[in-house]
Image (cartoon, rainbow, N blue to C red; front, top):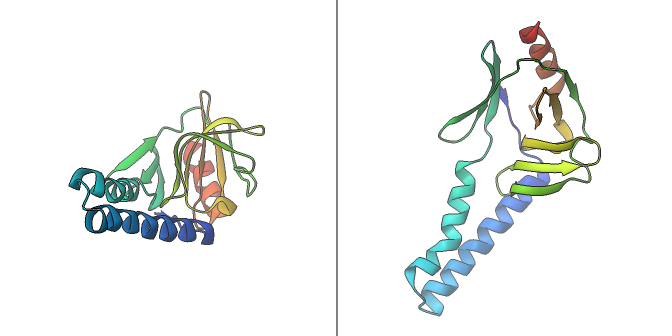
Length: 156
């Protein structure tokens, strides 16, 4: 398995937002004595985001497996057109749907270079772009060069 190390920005965002949400929940529940459902909502958002975090990647004959906290997301590599390391892949991206830094950068993004793409990223500087016939996927393994070599070997 290829690890998915966190960038400093991901750590900073995750810690800051988690503390902020805990503070909001505390304020609503104990200082304002608000409804439990409303008070717990910020914490539910943090826990939900944590479940979607990317823990690592496995490449095999069945394609790419993206390991989450409790499940695995599979991406078929049939017809792979290109796999390359690109530390600038996410630069200038607009998040269309997904998570922009609370435990991961995941979801649907768009930029001028890649167009629309699906991200499963924890460190944008380690980005690897996989161009498939109908979609583009970006991941961030600990050793991007080794990951690219392994994908190339598997799809041969």
